[in-house]
Length: 234
Ligand SMILES: *[C@@H]1O[C@H](CO)[C@@H](O)[C@H](O)[C@H]1NC(C)=O
Ligand SMILES: *[C@@H]1O[C@H](CO)[C@@H](O)[C@H](O)[C@H]1NC(C)=O
Image (cartoon, rainbow, N blue to C red; front, side, top):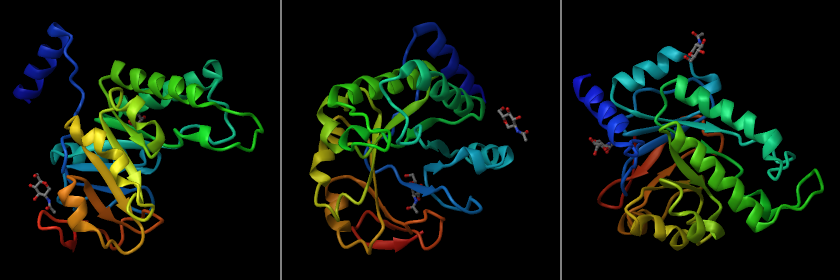
């Protein structure tokens, strides 16, 4: 407690950025369905806050875990160009993450510019950059760490704004190298494969925090790449 208070006072006095900045190979688990398995021996828990009781979060925090709030980032039909509408909704989610003592957030759907979505409007590359950097700024204003979810084509433009990256199936799609700018900036890259993971050696050599999970992300049958590049249950 004393250490935490000292850090907080330091942040207030120095205006330092005190949000969590995970370094490469930080281990993690990802579960957004079912009853949360709190027994994992990992540093980061990426979870859905809506469904997680407050006392579960408190227990994770007391056990020294970093807790990340996964949230669906407005559904794809929401027009990210309309920050006047979307801004307050997202701000409220960030406030909730803060109130629940999360260390950071993982906003989903931050690459809608790659699709023409159900609303029929066209979001450009630049619209997406504006929205994503806005999200990162708002998270940091609340001392929340923020991760870039997928959105690989924008990594060069966004790596300096986000604290870590999270990616689904870069090995299946053969696009993991796109994430290396994060590693070079000493920022963690969290990778999740849904099919049988055959690339643990490559993952560890490229310093990615790589796991295998069910597509439902229900906490069942979790595996991770260990330091020796082997796929092991955890
Ligand atoms: C995860 O990382 C932490 C910190 O380095 C370590 O203590 C723990 O043993 C690791 N967990 C697993 C399952 O390897
Ligand atoms: C959980 O914590 C949040 C944030 O502090 C609070 O708004 C909410 O009322 C709490 N829920 C319950 C059921 O206590």
